[in-house]
Image (spheres, one colour):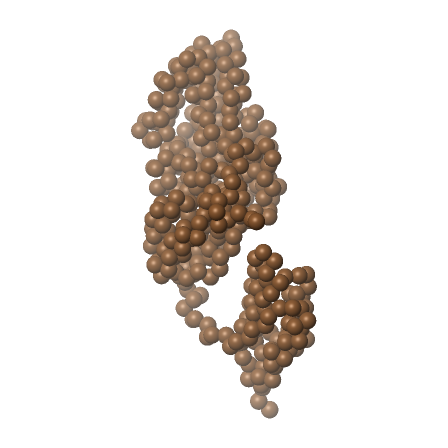
Length: 407
């Protein structure tokens, strides 16, 4: 006897969500001998959409199999033949597009989705990652040339003042285990050497050299030694006063706390000074802290540094050293920074993130974040809002904008 013909069908159940709907539907399909291939479920404001791709024999009528159950559950049932699979789909590149902004409107999202279509890519799924303290959406993309996709998305993002990140969809994205941050103007809002210089009346002189160094116009080591030389004779008390003025970047506590709770190793690698960096790292529970050392003689700065300078190349070496120490492959590392001396570290990491960075860094990094909150980087790692606990001591929370706030 010939086997009964099989048929692939799409099943959609939609209606008010309540516990047990998915379990009841799957149990009914199993009892009927239906083969399940794919399943996708979404709940928005208490309304459920459950989609299933199944295979049945010609003798199975899903309208009969699930009709009475759908009525009992109070949901609508739609069944239709599944379209033929696209044999070229398996060879298409897949990407994750993350969109982040304090205020994310329908117009901005229309520009993003239009840019995706222009690139020849197709949106497979859209998920809202967060509605506060910033708004974030994740788009799963199939097809399209990645270079073209990135270009058109960056144009749309610039026009609507939103951040867009494009990453290949790979397991490594959620397998990141080590996050390494710059400190000055990244983990904190300040340039520490300028705070110290302000305490002794040399702020303007030091700030001018700092700006040129961070823009890549000056060799970092030479500029650092020149700035430190201006601080010769400064008392240790001035360092302590500067440390008291340090302001963490909004979202820094939430970023570090969430990463630690999820099992990440967190490190800071700073061109600043250990006298300031070490207490910050201890306060936040950061696993590794590396910074330059000021020479102190008789309670005052000598105007020199102790040991090798942690410069652009040194930061990359420290990232590799910490990764090896923690037995984390480089492709599972993340580096975050803003200045030219972060470029090698950003290039060495599996994911390099430019955070409110100089143009030269944004151009070189894998992706950029320009919202004023450091915890927005969690969304680039695919961490949704329900896995993030906002630290109550994080200051300046950003209000959710129109189109993204919860009622």
